[in-house]
Figure (cartoon, rainbow, N blue to C red):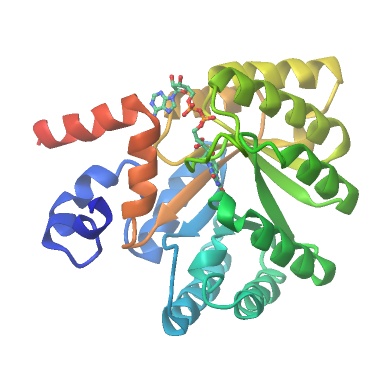
Length: 295
Ligand SMILES: Cc1cc2nc3c(=O)[nH]c(=O)nc-3n(C[C@H](O)[C@H](O)[C@H](O)COP(=O)(O)OP(=O)(O)OC[C@H]3O[C@@H](n4cnc5c(N)ncnc54)[C@H](O)[C@@H]3O)c2cc1C
């Protein structure tokens, strides 16, 4: 229902894009490049995401892949410091796994000659965990510039982290943004945090340049404690946060000498992403409401 209301062509969505603007850098590549330029000026790097998911036709998936190629060219010609993040359902995973893999490989080949050649595959809901990991492994066998996201809320994730460490693949660790059944996922925040810190320690001590993706002060403090205890150099990992979320915490972490990468989504298909940000945090929902009344 909310997705229909916020579909890119709906008059409602056009009218209310200003609310999503805190979390979405804009609708065009040029908007995203400008947003990243400002992020770079604050001493942070970025990962650009062209919004879109659950694509069900080949034409749209191919167009999305072409947009990623254009983004890579724009990143290179503008000189900004950014890599890219891709959702496999945006480039055809729900249509045909081999088709999605071919699209991913086109992106990886173009990224290979970029200043930062790294491409992150975002993780989606648990129905897609296995197929996402399988496509990732097939791509990784040929292209070492690809990495994955693993979600601390899933009970299977310790085994997936072990596998990524064995492969020497880069992992972004996050809590997980999708509602999952209790048979396969932890429901309580204390269990999710405990698993997050166990997996972060594993990745920081044995993994390859992990991305510590969270806005949770307790997790940030826990990770700093792990780093200090194992005497891990600050250039061996990076913190990651979302565009528009906790900017003051982002700045403080940079001032303390850590690497910080900001995930910067842009494009017209912002509804699903925006909805997840609003649903997961009361502060975000309050921000959206206050934007409406403060115009
Ligand atoms: C860079 C990045 C990439 C991600 N990629 C994926 C992915 O591929 N797949 C996936 O499933 N999920 C992804 N996520 C989302 C992630 O899984 C969580 O849903 C999301 O980050 C919320 O969890 P959190 O750990 O940040 O803490 P939260 O539980 O959201 O927040 C912890 C505390 O932070 C504070 N806080 C959080 N946001 C705000 C705010 N806007 N304003 C004020 N205070 C705030 C609150 O006080 C709260 O108590 C990503 C997250 C990041 C940061």
